[in-house]
Length: 161
Image 1 (cartoon, helix red, strand yellow):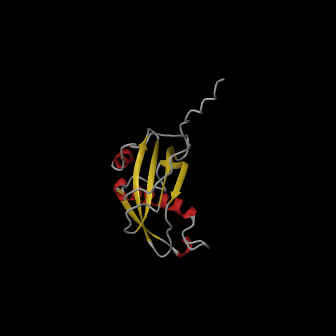
Image 2: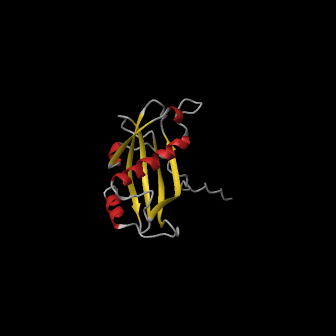
Image 3: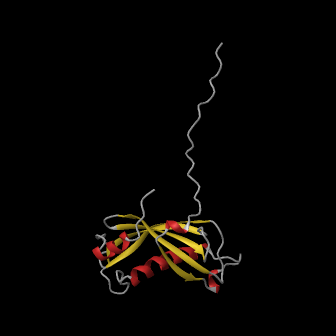
């Protein structure tokens, strides 16, 4: 008589649970002041506000660096993907510090990663990313990331994990 073999171990295919990131993971920070309207009925910043902070932090930096003209520039970035993980609440009144890094810089696209920190905290309260595809303003067809923009983005690039 033969006995049934015990089942072989199966490698887990569960995704790795996201974890808060340290300040050292981000080369640049921009302050964001929360507003009364950012809080929801639960007393903390509503999840949709985090996405606007991602846009605000990155685009304000690009405008400050002179590589994004939102009114007349020929090249614009369109968001094709976005995601956020939440680790700790943020609320009004509070200053948020947005850490910015570039995780991937392609020919016509860039993956920005943004960590949101409560002022002075060492770990992210939230962390996420969005991907811009750079396109011609008129045709909406992908174009190469302009050289001046590429130079600014390279300064924010971090080694891939």
